[in-house]
Length: 429
Image (cartoon, rainbow, N blue to C red; front, side, top):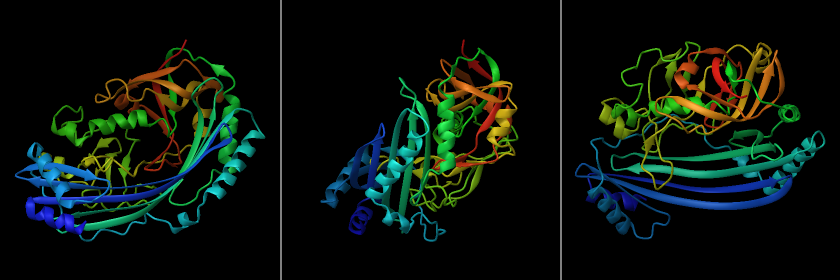
């Protein structure tokens, strides 16, 4: 990598080398039967260059010929995007624990035994198809640039996913846990999954009306994705976002705050620097309903004339860095999920949604099917909803928050509560 950076720096105005390698293992059960136990390894390297004010990128999975890779990057820059940013010199960043040595003790035999324990526990209490999966990995990544930055990190990740599938459907109830070392789904979590699965055998088509809707953490993406699309620096720069010119204004309920904390190591995406070598920082996107910030990478921070927030990440080694939110959380409220349910006369609890990416996402509009949800009547869950959709506008819905759960659930790169909204349009019978 050092040799590649050296010859690149001599040929172009600015150069950056990003690299990674990853080893991952997977154990999965399909319909309660062991299905796969695989190991995979991958590695890659990307060279980004800026020459004559234009940016180019080349990538490889095996660096056999550094000069050939540099030639590809320069050719890419000849027809590349015009940019004016400078690659950062980053030397000192806070230490963030991304790796837990306990991950080294995980092995497939133990996971197969754990999978069978979970399946036996669920099967003893109810019928139905059970799918289960474990994934664990160790990764190394780093970035070097011609400004003098040289940063690297080692990370570990473990996930467990359990799903009970509704008969004759592709949907179901699921529970997952993520962390940096082996983690279990405890008995209380399994009991809650089983209880809801038994309740789901009774199906209800709700009335078409406006009513309270609780979105579980696994369903909140339908609203949050619309905010983050509008808060994209690309859409802000192109002046197509409904949030343009609204920094400092109240856009949702004052009960709602959305924070990014890169140093919260309970989440697996914690890091002290992004894929461009920019230091990350803690800040609020929305503070008590007021729009206070949006994520930026180096390119669009320069275009917008603001400081980069350290949110420039690569979706893959083949991709250029782009701004994206990570390690974010919503401030917890004061009521438990059970307390919220008990206060509903008629309403919906939605666990997962279908079509969350459809509609005018940029404007905040949504119209989504309830893949897994429950009908609530007089404070009691009566059964699983079918043939049901919810619709509205994300900003309007987030302006009608009734309660926020007093517990945050770790979703991997976010910590989210269940949220109860009033007056959501529900389409049923």
